[in-house]
Image (cartoon, rainbow, N blue to C red; front, side, top):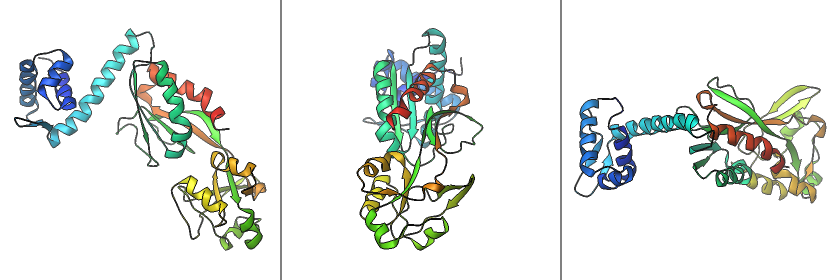
Length: 292
């Protein structure tokens, strides 16, 4: 008996929540699937499913086991594909990215990539939470700033410029700050980042903004800025449309920080997979242009 016996049947039942539908999906008889699950439960010495006449659902142990088995099966299939499919991207591609950048730029690029590769299934998780790609089973993450996780490979795919801005109406009333220290006497509109960055004669300065308004939506922050509520610092793709129309103006240009790198990061053990190589190359070619 192989240690893999029953795993495919288990994954199929967990996915379909039905022995009959699982059997149909993998081309086996319901009797075979049922026997395979019983034998697997005996081998792992744990109950994997709660069974009634109407429902089949995972136990807590089964849920944990399913997450691991699904990931292992995916990697097995990808290893076979790497050899047998002449480098064609296929299988499931799980991507995580911050919400705003993902909605505006990353999701459309990856959607077009998926449309060109019909054997690829894509899941994009847009979240401002920093996800552990390895432990949570993601293939790719889009990150900004410094990437320090030694388990990951980071490829620079674009960069973004941070602008410090305010509405003309606010500056007419409160004046224009000329230094980081002067920000303490102004209303600052804070967004997702808890710090603002500046560069003074090559030396980085970090400031923690304080004010009456804070929101984890960059769009809400720029709208508050336009209304005259205070000063904000945001990436270029938020600021530029309003800057061009004079609705906000740049301030503290002499303290402009260096552009932030944008990275495509992925677990080291996946760097040879065609789906990873393909989507990273696509992001390198398209993301910077899309963000201009």
